[in-house]
Image (cartoon, rainbow, N blue to C red; front, top):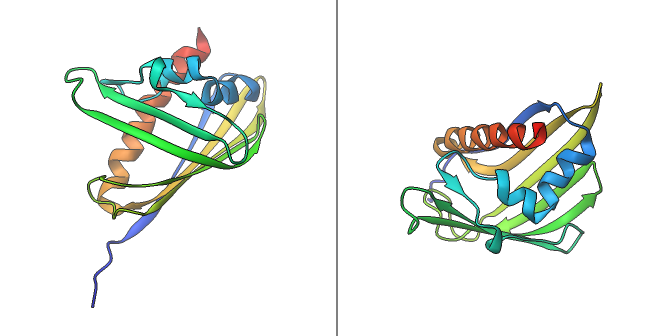
Length: 154
């Protein structure tokens, strides 16, 4: 009998002090994406970012550790559903990621909702994650969203 690790979807809800169009653009414009994505201590060099935000389009980039640039984390996903200023859904087949079996299809779903007064409620669903990795993923997104707050305020 094969034992399977418990998995769950990461769900994060966050309010940004910016309209949906600006939050959406931060996810789909390569220059903006490179400026904020990745937790503190990691960056995304602009030359590694490619985003074609349409169903069937791809998103690829590489996060690089600021202290040790030999540590990298590449990502390459395919958008399966896109509704401008409202929804981004992408799938990525995972390989060589500790704790996640090779070939696992990870889904990332980003919903943007108008909260009034120029604010946007973002709901992120991503996974499946093994339970022991979910906490690190949550912290990484939280750190990235802090950088996104700063970009949107700028």
